[in-house]
Image 1 (cartoon, rainbow, N blue to C red):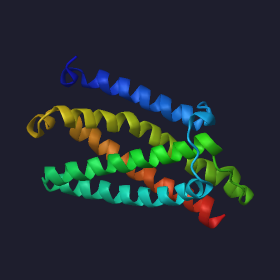
Image 2 (tube, rainbow, N blue to C red):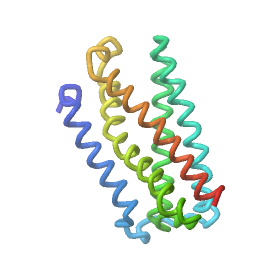
Image 3 (cartoon, rainbow, N blue to C red):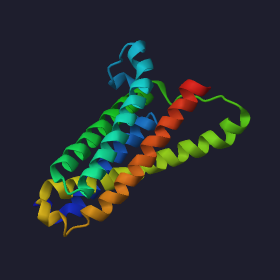
Image 4 (cartoon, rainbow, N blue to C red):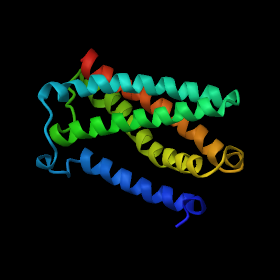
Length: 184
């Protein structure tokens, strides 16, 4: 099959596989016995490392966005591939920890615990899920088309949407981290 001619289908298949893995880990459908167990110190460090990874991803998205606005395609590509790598690193570490230990419980003040935190977390998770197929789509386009050809595809439009949603999702992820591990 020629991927270039079937970008939506390939992106859809990859998205379904990726999201199935995400949901399997997040819902603890993967038996923990199948995963090697890291030392507790590593598991406890993952949220802190992921906060740094999220901040770095925000930086690379901004760099990539500014680069393409200036016409610097090479810098844009490097920044967005870096963001994708950071996203993958975040996701693997997060899902590994959740698959082994479950989600982190939150017990803060009633207003924060019952209303504010779930709203922030819900938007963060929803945007992260929506970003997966968008990012896969623009990546498949970018990997199968030349730069002049990309201008004639949905890459610029979908890329802007994906980058904006990614920025919000990563930012809210840092807020979630701060609420869980710093403030309460």
